Every structure is written in structure tokens, then in C-alpha cells.
Image (cartoon, rainbow, N blue to C red; front, top):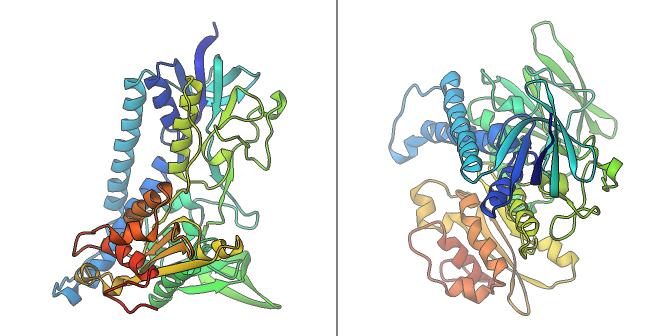
Length: 470
């Protein structure tokens, strides 16, 4: 069979790869996107979007159960898991179908199969149909292979009782008792779903804090909510093994440190200890591309140490976020097409869909101090916002970290309702090198949640009106 030739070949059709493919097509490049499983990658198929559908449903369920505070008396609310899964799957189908249409509409070709780089410009693909194809990329190969759930040797996935995040978004029953190994973002997002649906939740985290690296003031609010709803949070602890009981339950042995152990009996164990990059076994090392612990290092335009090989998304380094992957896909496409572009962002926002939500961009207070920057911090609580009271979502706060001397905004951190929607203003502030005065003097509409950003900036200046200044 004759070798097919393209300007660029993208390996991986996730939020980095498909965006790169679309943009290359828009820039009149002949492009092929090779996808091993389904277009949309982890994000659309079982990660970002499906999990947020379940999170939204569980949040609505919890709100309905406690709607009596608003004068709404609802009896007999229950979860139809099959219908829930059908609804979630419908969203996935619509989005992945949209991606296929966009690639096709922009002239990009798609091939399904397992790709291996066999030379600086050649790729061998074992197709889904069972054949083998060889393709050539005259300008560039883009590695967008994403990441995979980490599996613990002592907790091998069985897809039923010992599960990873992929299985967790497709459960056909609500576990009566759920233990989550890993108090990071994925573990708390999915653990929160099933807690709100009625699961008795235990979280085992090896470090002293939940969600390491996230602003500690924000994580404290989320932890308090989990505990208030009955969760057992075990920090500085490790799940070391398990035994199956005769009644089908699982007895998980937990090392609490200092020679102390506990046994937690549950029905399902969710392993959520992180993701590992898929940079190995692609043939990269054989052609001289540097691969470090599965990551493929790149420069500020996404190029590896081999000039025509690029890498984007999770496989190219942290943070492992879909929107970071998409932006890198756009940058790399521009470079391949001969345009000027670079990964020159000031900050990449993070969106955490716990309850309440956390959203963050830029430096935390601790990180700024570690850099030797003297800071001023402005805070404003949701409990002082009329809109937050009106929607019965008063937990949390806005927090703005700024340089004490210049007042330039260094970081924005929000914990509370719709935090993930509200953070975009903080991202824009960092990108435009805004100052507290810029945010505080900008008129925000009332009554909204967003005006908390303005109030926090004013608090940082000592000019807050609706709370006491320091």
C-alpha cells in the first residue's frame, strides 16, 4: 500500500490534538489526526465533561433535598441511575460528534488506530480494522497522547469494586459506602458526587492537606463541607491493602502513621492518585526525542529537542489541564504553518468542581512569599453577597493576592458557588497585568456573585465598603 503523505500528523485526538488538527486545517495545512480510542480523549469521553454532568446532577439532588429552607417542600426525590447515565452519555455523544464534524469541516482527516513513530517523519499505524498503514509528515509530527490513570499494585482495577475515574463516571449503582484513595482534585470531585447521592464517604490522603498545591484557605472550606456532611477524612494516611469479606464488602487496611492502623469496610474503592503521561512506547526515544518519566519536554513553542517533533497537552508537562492542551494545540499549529506564536501566557486557571467549587489562577499567598514578594491580600466572603444569600450558597470567599508596593494582581483564588465561572475575570486581570485599582474601580453589576471580585480588590486597598477593612 502506498504511503500517505501529509504536512502534519497529530497523534491523539483529545482536547490538544483535535484543536491542533482543526487549526492546522484552518491554516490550509494537509493534516491527519490519529486517535487510538475515541475523539475527544479523556476529557470528553470520561473525564472533564462526563464527570461535570454527574457533579451537576448530584448538586441539584442535594439542593432539592434541602430546598425547604427556601419554602420548597419536596417529598420522595430519588436517583434513577440508568437515566442519569443515559443523559450523561447523550452529552458525550453530542460533543464527540461535534468534534468529528469540526475536523471534517476544516479539512482534517481522521484515522483510528495505534500509532508508533518509526522515523523523524514517518508513523506506522495499526488500524482499528486490523491492518497496518504508514504515513509521512513532511513538516511536523505532533504528539498529543495525553495521560492515563495511575493504578496502585495493591489495588488493581476490577471495574466493579476497585475502580478508577473512568469507571467512576459509569457506575450503575450508588455505592452505600465509598472509600477514595487520594484527596486530590479528581478524588474529591467524584467522591463528592456519590456523597451527595447518599454514599458514606471515606477519603485517604497521604499528605497533610487535601488538594496539595491549592490555596490552603480554599481547601479548608471544602474539607469543612465534606466533614459536615459526614465524610471521614484521613490525612497523612495510606491505604495499604484490602480483603474481601463473605458478604461482598471490602475491608481496607489504612496505615495512619506512627504504627497505627485502621480497617475501613466499604463497598467500592475509588483509586484517584493521579495521572501519568503517555510519552513512552511511541518510538520517540529511538529517533532521539528526550522523554522524562513519560513526559516529553518542549520549548516555548511546543517543539521538542528534535525540531520537527512537537508535543502538547498532558504529555508535554504540567499542569495537566484540557484548556492548557487546547491552547498549546493552537500555538503549535500556528508555528507549523509558519506563523508567529508562543506559549506566553501569564497564568493558567484551574477549575475544581468540588462543593463548593474552587477556582484559581496565578500565585497563592504562600507561593508569592516564597518568591520574596511582600503581598497584600484582599478577601470578600460570599456570606456578605446578597446574591449568594438569595441562592442559598453563602460558603466561601474571593481572595486576591497583590504586590504590596505596586498593587499589581499576582493571583486570584475563589472558593464558592460558580467559582469556576467567575475565575475568568482573574485570568484576564493577570494577562493584562491589572492592579487592585483596576478591579476595584470597575463597576460590577448588583446583585451578582461577580461583584465579590470588586469587593475583594477594594478590601486589598483598605477601601472596602461592605465589610470591615483591616
